[in-house]
Image (tube, rainbow, N blue to C red):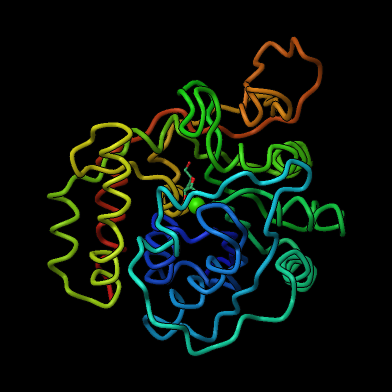
Length: 311
Ligand code: RIB
Ligand code: CA
């Protein structure tokens, strides 16, 4: 039986890779995409969610729109310098055919978890605002969600949106603090592992050779993302593997070395968004997070290659 998941996402170029690869994975039943601001404005992220499910005949999957800004900190800027003004690399994709589901993303999460107690895995790969709002509105979901497997944060690697913070957490650190501290099982795929998995131009070219609707879309949108990695890190066409790492973990957790660590989320000041492990519990009792610290990067690349190129 396939595993039920909700992807909470800000598509977003690497979000698109995750979504397309997951839709090629019969191990999962995607109950819905819930969209949030982050890589672009939430309106654009929601439209991109619809485009992605429709691309290869999955238009029956509901796509909802959620929060357009953080819970407390006003959103200063979204990640359009990384993902393009449209979140899809400035490629002007055609308008989707279907409509966005009228429910707020947080309500969709609540309704779906209550209707499937103990069965739903949440896969957040954007700012955690929708997830925090849903557990605030209906705390019962905390014990009813199977687990949370998220892309965000960093235990020991440097940040990407600031010297210390990863973008998804920094966009809404208050939401992240609520989600990390809720008491449900959280697995964190942060920069410690996502920056160790490098998709090279050769790897991407081999994906494009499969010439499917998914690979053709990736070929259009990825140059923008590569451009950012080149400008910021001098990576010469290679990209980090952020959001798709959640799929690799869900399919084969043995690709990762994990450690359960008490985790603090800084919500204030210059270091807002920093996720700090406190293994000796010097800051009192903090919720433990299952943190991915090491990765079999070739194993992840092989797995994702297979899933991205399936039709
Ligand atoms: O830091 C990487 C994360 O920020 C990814 O989820 C990417 O899509 C952006 O949202
Ligand atoms: Ca994302």
